[in-house]
Amino acid sequence: MADIDAALVAASRWLDDVPGVVGVGQGEAEGTPTIDVWMNPGHDHGQLPSRLLGVPVRIRDAGGPVQAQPD
Image 1: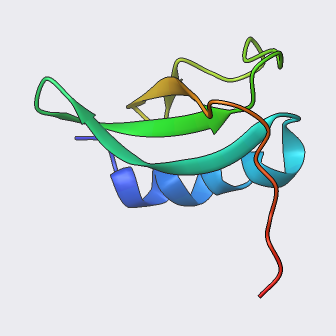
Image 2: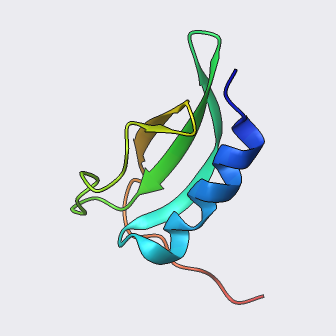
Image 3: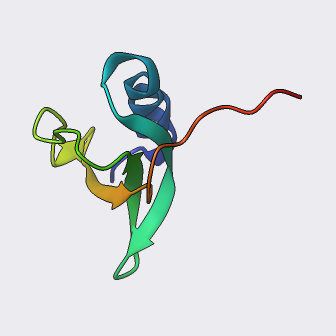
């Protein structure tokens, strides 16, 4: 069985390493845990794997530019 927690930790690096990635979280598809990756439109998600540590990766549209807001 895939280790979703380890996959989430590994995927969180994409926030800094892959242009356009603005969010990473756990999802579910057909009863199976997934790693959901939100990307800004226009960025290439081809450099992301389809599975990470045995967990399927789903690319989600962030819907537009996402920027951090000040506190």
